[in-house]
Image (cartoon, rainbow, N blue to C red; front, side, top):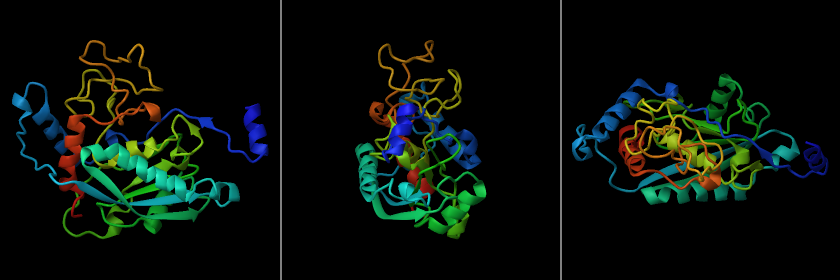
Length: 292
């Protein structure tokens, strides 16, 4: 604490540590999305002959290209305004593409906006958050909008909307809330120790594409994240506990997916997605996002 105060008095940004906590969970999912995810899970469940897709959902066969918009939202004081740079945004889109390119998904950053607003930088109230998104959101329902807020409230590093069914032609105001809120200090070069390589935005984007946490439900016996090839996991991961391996469900096959992007591990611990997670994103894209 004393060292942090000295650094602050010298105008040096002190590094801080926070446990990764995400504001997205299954209670935020629409009934249609949940039903679809459960059906897809059943078609891949252990014991299904060859994992045959009984529901015949059409998976995206061509590469997915996602139009992307970054919104940097700081407080109005000079220190906050200067704390997030264009270079950080450039490094962030590179982190996104590095994480997803192996799964035939790429992100095309079309614009980065910078806004100084003491209320929006915090995003504490639903009304304020919606006002920010109504003012800043760009593109269609298939466009990823990430709001990097310097003082994101709620003791979370990020949260994101899950896909929801859009039918017919609807005005942009109908999906203004769609997108991700991310603590700007998690961007590459940010000041949150162990979570400043841009992986929070990578994690939240997984939700936007239809994935849930690998520990969803915090149970060893439930449906979990509705993905067949992620082992049962009852707790989120803090750090990168490799030796001994973390195993919150010792009576179930496999160990915890600490290297999976949909856990809460340190940024440096993440390695990617499973085959079924990749297939899920590819399957849900044309169902929920593409063409809307």
